[in-house]
Image (cartoon, rainbow over all chains, first blue to last red; front, side, top):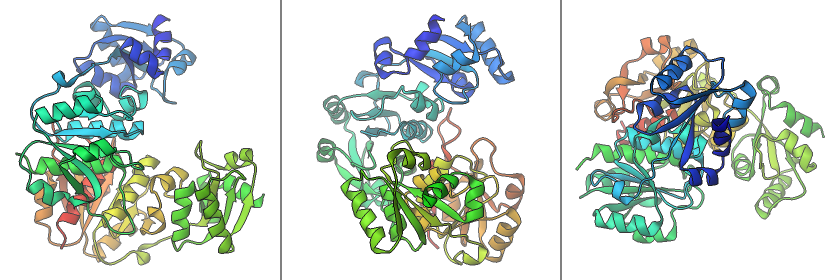
Length: 253
Length: 253
């Protein structure tokens, strides 16, 4: 019952920040969590589990993870989704700072991207398309929000992600010699820019409505655009991030 | 009040199919609708509109479109979103068959893609990245579902989209000489495939869990993959569609 009230509490960002814990929900996400190095505090489940969830419960049990069986109604009160498959886990948030980021590869930077589904999808893409890390700048939704965790499909558990303020991020990017490229509709075409790149790149994607922050725009080395067919003048931010990351992969150093 | 009950009714697919009408919600979407050739049946709004919505109301009024002002509660009963900006429009669904599809350019095919947000995002990408049309095969969510319309950000009003059964679609694709390429993790790398293409291409993206349908897989000319970094083995379907469409645009005929 203590785990139940903890899981309920962790729906609020303040509680996640204070406790350093988050909730992973659903069979696929809990599986990815158990496959990852993250520390799992406990598993909450209902009695009515399907085979895959039951197997997962047994796996957690074999690792001496606390398992609490609760009623459907209690479970629903802690779950974020409507059909949560009867299993969730509480685990430790891996707090990463600049010192924990790899000093190789290209990076992705999220500048005030607010939609949790988009942010999770982008982190899933960053991991799949070979970015070495992702930096989340202020204004970006909390990375450990249940919907971000779910949309990331496990990528948050292995791909290094750091929430940094701009000064920290900028200093580190400069020290690493990373070129800062911002996505901008009036920039040079991405294919051409990629072909002429001379070093590691940090690609910035921003809030769809507001665009990149003024201080990020000032620090940018290049502005890159994805060619579009009028009257269209924008793409979903997760689609744009995917295209830019895929292009970067095509033009490795 | 007739328009109010009509808008409420159109939340159900059956009602949309029977009436041939759909609902477009929010300032940006209604703006795009008024910019499009689609026939608008009426506008429903509340009294408390911001400047942009008020301007939009005036635009509709100047075109002799029926405008009904309703209470906040009545409006909320017809709206799909939680913060619907107080304006929605009812418009005619442009029913398209194979005869309405252009006989030029590359195409996108949706094979049982169920998530409405993904489908709307994909149609937005298809329009922006220059696909000449999109075909939705059975199992794909209704294209005129409120969430699809919202996520498409107006693209549904101008980009030609046809919901076809497989036999119709296949016959038309063959008659057009379109090569059918399916996204598949174990296919040839997309960049290589694109560089060697010899004609118009119809790219198929499928349900993330189930993959392409057996009959579509049998008809495929090529299987193309996006290179991924283990342990990742998949991308969000809208991200994958965006990358494939962007690659097609890089290798025009």
